[in-house]
Amino acid sequence: MTDRARYEALVLPHLDAAYNLARWLTRNDHDAEDVLQEAMLRAYRHFETLRGEARPWLLAIVRNACWTWLRANRPAELPASQDEPESEAPGPEALAAREFDRRALNEAIAALPLAFREAIVLRELEDLPYKEIARIAGIPIGTVMSRIARARRLLAQALQPAAVTRLRVHK
Amino acid sequence: MRTDDRLHAYIDGELDAAAALELEREMAQNPALRASAERLRELSSAVRTQADYHRAPQRFKNAGREKRRWLIFAPAFALAILLGAGIGLYLARPGEDAELVASHVRATLANRVIDVASADQHTVKPWLSARLPYSPPVADLSSEGFPLTGARVDYVGGRQVAVLVYQRRQHIVDVYLWPDGETTGRAFARDGFNVEHFARGGMRYALVSDLNRNELRDLAKLLNSGSGS
Image (cartoon, rainbow over all chains, first blue to last red; front, side):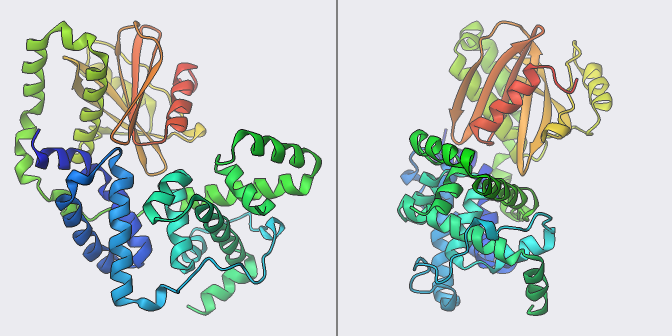
């Protein structure tokens, strides 16, 4: 098989996953397409660095392309550290929302700070284990664990009935 | 580690056996903790089933497609190669798995996963029976979280086979089946795709998907138990 054919057979099946990640990280179609274009070019050029599974490898490239793009275009979205301890940390008992409305849920995910949004998208939408998420995001597994926990706590807070209304009003 | 973080890792199946056991012991004595785990599961599953999954625009999928015109001839090539290699290739099981994955990828790339789109087993079954020398069983597993979305006829291992197409969230699961009761259950993974095999009622089943191994195995178990038929 030629490299081109191998690239198409191994990498192209994961285009939707690549786009979905870029779309959630940039939060709009136009920027997601730009970033994906750039990432696919990079993936093709660095195809020989592919070891093991193609999906996490491609997602790591897309993730880095997104962060590079955000750093250049929306630096405000990349705070120095998003992992500092939570000032007020509600326990799991704060998770009371049972009936999740689709729109509120999507808004709540989009409103998560970048690092947490990334963790939750890779975990829940790509169904990746912590180990792969750590490799893609270039962070320790312990950080993946705390980011996912924090992301879910933030989502649960945002999905409280009162918070949903607040989220709408501020939009 | 905070108990709360442990709870998240627990519902993600990421706690090691000892820590999971310890947490289960705590939950047995603490109904509030148990309820928290349950709510977390609901939140996780709400994100999985209701968050938007953004699919790549078609223009990305078409990139390089013109260079892939030869794929139209892929079935003919496959036939020629298979005739040449004969039974040897058939016995080489990893080759068969690779071919199943290749067939699944080809169908996904060419956007021809489904020839007959229907969630109704009573539409899908006669459609397949009319095109194949056998009548494959078609199970409706929507209540188990694996809705049927349709079927196609594909060419694998030198024969025409029925392919039932199920969906799990954004993942497509191709269930290849053909008459041949001779297999022991086994699994295979390649390039991020999983393959599960088993035999039931004189039919061979091969499930191919980029879905994770556990859920693919769940579907294999459901089909093997005869649910939904």
